[in-house]
Length: 237
Ligand code: TYD
Image 1 (cartoon, rainbow, N blue to C red):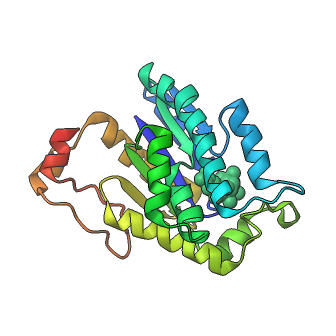
Image 2 (image 1 turned 90 degrees about the horizontal axis):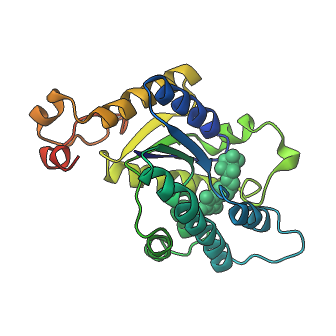
């Protein structure tokens, strides 16, 4: 099982990655937690290069390729081997971050950024992406140390609004593969909802799911926090 957490800066992803891993371990799963950019020695160096470049100029295309390069290493050296060994993998950020930040935020285009990432990852997709949705202002307030902002965090609220919208649009288009949760909910509530959904994934679909037979569009309050799965998808699992 491969689960990715996505969301704006300050959404609380790293806490939820840890809590999900703890929960999965309690049901006997072997779990690997990791993060992007990073997760490998070369990825950590690329992370420093792209987020704290010093005097180096990082233009948008270079930025997109650095993130994709770090991800290629991550998939090849860490994620695929772990999945092959039967471990659950939980990552803090994955392809959707590039689509949102570089594709939308930097204006490189969603399709192009998807394409380079499909190549970089050998088209490895998460089974579930959890989007912790946060308004840019709230995310900024939740970040502890504004003086330590990286290049992305230092971008304008408009930039971060576009990122948020892009994440939400992707999730709304595919409620089966996404779970959207309000990042301002209590930590324990988020953790419980994530665990419920992920454990459903691990056990296969609940009987009620295939009976329903239709995928529900995200609803206003719970958004994509829906567990209705079309029969075709249920069979696929
Ligand atoms: P992260 O370490 O998750 O920051 P935070 O913990 O503050 O959320 O990610 C670092 C930054 O890199 C974050 O602002 C998002 C950005 N980023 C991209 O722009 N593209 C990418 O592909 C990834 C993985 C991250």
